[in-house]
Image 1 (cartoon, rainbow, N blue to C red):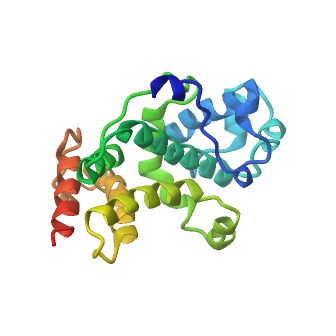
Image 2 (cartoon, rainbow, N blue to C red):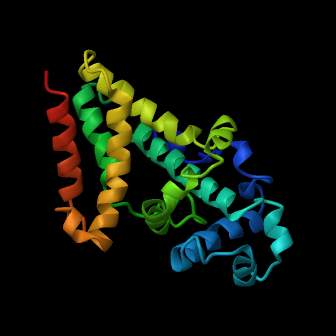
Length: 226
């Protein structure tokens, strides 16, 4: 299985960019340093002018790939969800019990990650910090319905659907599998954020460990008890 996935390309929906950044060295440079700069400054203070200075390029060059920083953020978030789905598919291959597959899915949604050397221009650890801090800004906008029609959130919805299907295997009578999975995915972000910035709102420690995974696993399987 690893050999089959060795040369995989994480494909982001075409409407999320103007020109595919994966298709050129300059595009990959924009993604690589865009991740570091958004993590460093936050989305509000991040600008294409600052990114152009960081990569010794021009704003016009960046605008050939993304029409706005919101679109760049949407691209990064979509890439992240596609990457998690890739990891999930690999991890549950040949694992038959749906309970085991669901535990793996929860672990992937909640767990700490390491950089994946198969994607050298993406720092996944830094990207996860952006997802935790900024991902809600990709869809909490006035344009969310139009963005949804254009496919901005397909990667997130596809991952949640894949996990919701496992939930349905475990308990076909449970009426809210999609709600449960999206709640787990968002809770994983919020609990990490709270641990870092609003610790009185969570029992999860800042370093995470396995606490978050244990909490979400407990919540899901107690919910699914018949």
